[in-house]
Length: 336
Ligand code: OGA
Ligand code: NI
Image (tube, rainbow, N blue to C red; front, side):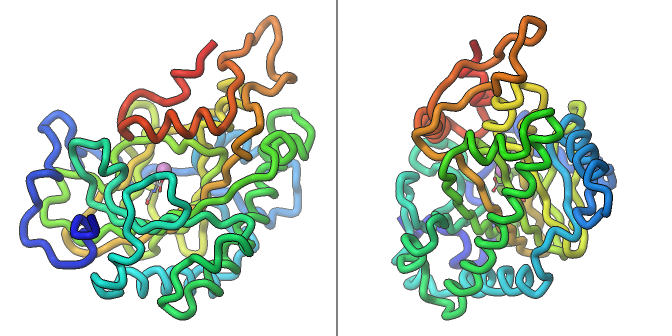
């Protein structure tokens, strides 16, 4: 029900259904505030250096930030601006788009999977399918009036960047440059515009609890003013601090499988705060539903047997959405 949206009114206290058990709380005072997340300058003149930096980041963190990625700063600002405008729409406008059915290709929802979960998360999100654009844009929100145009341009640019990153990641694994683009098939692209309102008790709840992304590659545009993304590194949660004009890239479960476990789809989470709302725009590059996925043949041998079995993305995605977000790594269910 649309009444469950949290961006439609102010909250004095955290409702009981958002409060985590003591053992599951974020323990914000233990988070490493100023850790280093690899930063890769994509305009570096030496391509081999870019490939090797990306490979190192994929091995060490599964996360990196990119600079000089080709997306104009004005476009990123415009995307953030329409996102904010969208979440300022009236409750009646928002109710028209509300759905808690993960199969819907355009929907405004809240938390993660309200049908399945027992504790909710302090997040509202607009989830859109984005490829092919001509197919989906006519059903995207028409309010704010600039939404469709700004977000379509943003999606096109992100897709181009995604393909460039696939090429570098493929090369870093010793695969053909076009390996990933080919093997993932005609890729879907989804977007989640995540809005985390000010939260009365950030120490008791999450914006998004620890999870890994089920898709292949995620590119995140973060609020430049407000931090909230954290990544698990060597058993410790480290904060990813926003950098002007950067985009955050992380590997999803499918690249962990493809790399036969050499690269990791790393646990991450979003925490909230009591001072300021936070916005993030996540773009998910997703394999074609029907292609068969699994470790790249070239990365499987006597010394490194296949860690995961083959499966279709359709099978994987259904499994992912049938569970709670913070259970075991979904890929564990696909081990050989
Ligand atoms: C996601 C995600 C992090 C953030 O949408 O999958 O991890 O900072 N978002 O919003
Ligand atoms: Ni995520």
